[in-house]
Image 1 (cartoon, one colour):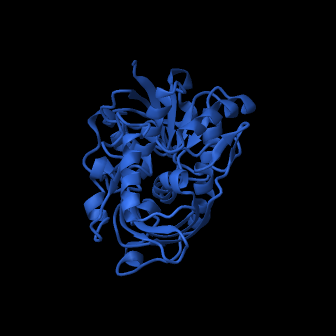
Image 2 (image 1 turned 90 degrees about the vertical axis):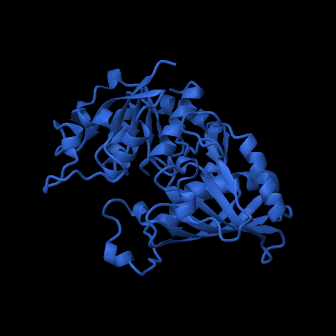
Image 3 (image 1 turned 180 degrees about the vertical axis):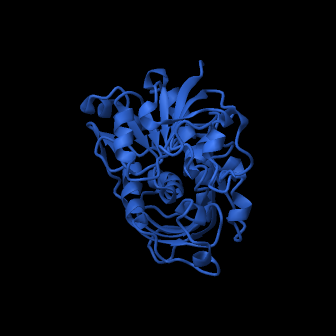
Length: 358
């Protein structure tokens, strides 16, 4: 395959940095252009990362990839879309809507923002979970008169929940879900969680998070019918909290099902799901999409966050849920900065390439 030329928009932010790292040495994608704010425009990428103290502010771990250091950062309106096959949007502000609209008129856009998630003609895609909804992208382009389209990822808290619910919906008829999240501080962005506020503490409220999870989960698990997505008949109630963990979201989940399910059934279910996952073999896909633990002390963020390069979703503490007639209780772990963010977006791009959408 000839490598596709891509741009990263919002390249100096924390999510943009994750994109730069995730695209290093990628066999399918070549970073052709970087765009950021007026303050960064015209500078070499490595210089745009320097703060007032002259120190490089790099949040993605390791070093700034050498391939990106010398790329000159552009203003967003200076991007040459005629050279691009795809734009990754990591814009972390209210400006995302207008920026992505302008880009999609000329080129496909894969986004980590919420700007377009709730539009009727926009699928919220998790590669390997609802690939068939990618068919809505053609409808979106035609309706809006765009050459491209916008394909957003879900909220990072939704990601792990939807991934683990998909097999339960298909085989056991999941109908009602109660979830409590224990979310890492990195999910709050570079300035989202004050160090003194989270130390020795649990924050019991994250603005707008619970509504996002409830709405997005139903859409992701729904079906594409007549040019729109019919939401899944799954009701979700959740409580989202922030805990003093650096990376990776843990979620405690209780699911009411139509058919009886026990922990052994759950283990077999996720093992079978691994063997049929649609993204197997793609460059960013993990060897195992699901990891299932019978050890009741798992999952734990420090033990799970590097499994599958941060792309594997881990399930543990599986038990029958006695409160419901039929049901399952479990704990999941999902890496909010990998599968739930830039690296998941790169995997989505790979899936869409394999379907001829890019």
